[in-house]
Image (cartoon, rainbow, N blue to C red; front, top):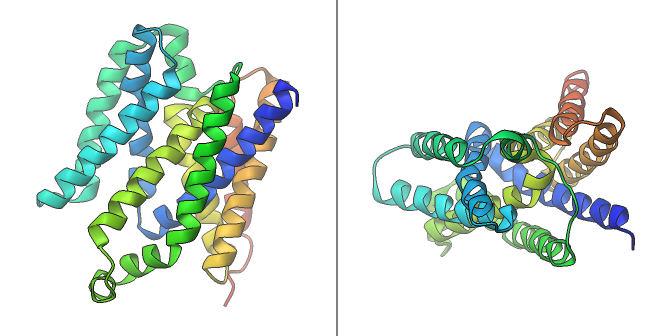
Length: 255
């Protein structure tokens, strides 16, 4: 398999993971929080570059740590989730901007796939498969915890644990797409296809399928557009996703 075809397979896997995880972010009203969480990766990228390490590993480590911090503050304090995420996001963006500069900062913010090593391909594909497996396996519990935490408790579901699992899976999905969309735009690929799917779907299964499909279409079309325009991949991908959303506004919602 050539490098181009491997990168294409990876981008499709990343898009499927983003579309699926985004459905629950939309239902949890995490549309703004999702975008903010992706910015937490920026300090990790800066630290990794300073230590001459792979920036993706630094981003993943910081995303997982930041997500865990958000969950701890949320569950042990009285602050709303949006407030906690906003504070962590602002601090992360400031620190990350200090640690990275110039072309490295542009790549971190807007995405540029570049050359991928074999281990990066394998690790990313495994991560995407893990996100998809977790979402499909836990979708019923996620919905129940979202709709009625009290009923979820009565059914023996540990709501705090499933919230942590979802947030960590969300962080992993964000990390998968940073090479393609950067920290500024990865949250958009998670939210926009899911928001479009929510308008068009009749049930959860349709929403998951549509969100994953739309994310794949946006990623492939945007990547091709970026190559033709000689631009970073993030903006064209999000532009295609946004175009699909605005087109969906012309479609009557299913009864």
